[in-house]
Length: 150
Ligand code: ZN
Ligand code: MN
Image (cartoon, rainbow, N blue to C red; front, side):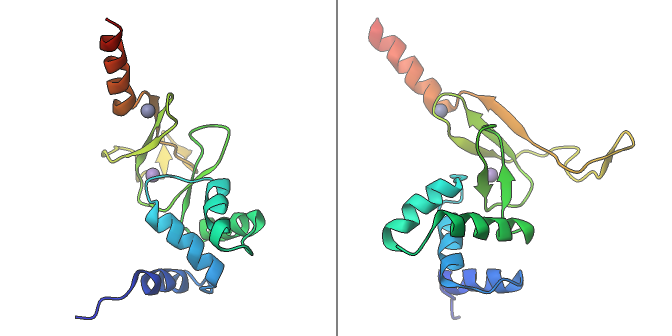
C-alpha cells in the first residue's frame, strides 16, 4: 500500500477545508502538526518559521491562523488570559495550565456537558475547559529541591 507523505496529507487537509494549499499555509500547518501539544502563539510560530522562510511575516502567520480558525482547522485557547494560543486538536478536550512553568497540557477526560447546546434553557456559544495548577514535573522538582535543602 502506498503511504502518502505528511506534506501530501496536510495538503489534502487544506483542500478539504476549501483553502488553497499555498507554501506558507502548508508550513504553518506543518508546524502545528509537529508541535501538536505545544499550543503555540502567533509569535512562537513566526519565530521558528521565519528562520528558514525569510518571506514569512507575523501578519501572514496571524492571517493564516485566522483563516484556519474560521474553517475549524484550529481552535483558540485563552487559558493564560494574556495571549491567544492555537490548538490543532479540535476534538473537545480540557486544558491544564501550569502556573509555574507555563506549560499547557491536554487533559482527555469525559465531560458530561461537552456536547450540550443548552444549559438550563441558556444557549451555549462557548465552552472553556480550563484547569490551573502546578504540573507533575514542577511538583517533582519542588520535592527534589526540598530534600536537597535538608
Ligand atoms: Zn510546570
Ligand atoms: Mn489542546
